[in-house]
Length: 133
Image 1 (cartoon, rainbow, N blue to C red):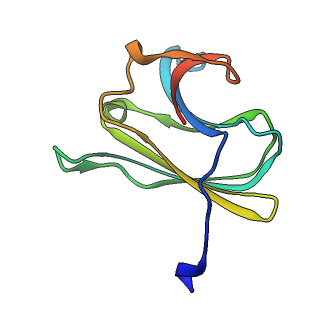
Image 2 (cartoon, rainbow, N blue to C red):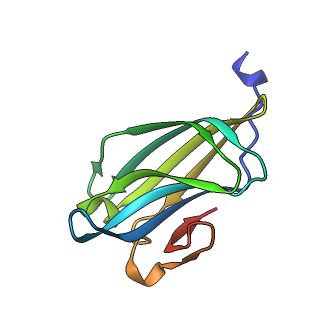
């Protein structure tokens, strides 16, 4: 039965990690965002994330986030990445419905890619960050 399920890979959905100023704590934070660059809304968005470093045998807790509906051409904050988490590999598994079809995609920010020198303008967010397509 499981082998009969066909879940296509998502398109025009991205994950970005953005460095932005936190006015409440007066510091710079790294935040992860999901971006819906589709012309239609997506629903029941489930995001599972985890950080890991295979060399040091280090891993973070598994984080889960649910977004009921993400409108077309919009974005939502997923989570704050603190401390050492930005120096290790981070993956985000995104699953959602578009209409009645289930979609899935994995996004990986490899170890060492979350850094100041990699920041680029992300148009829909209108912020500087690192984007994985």
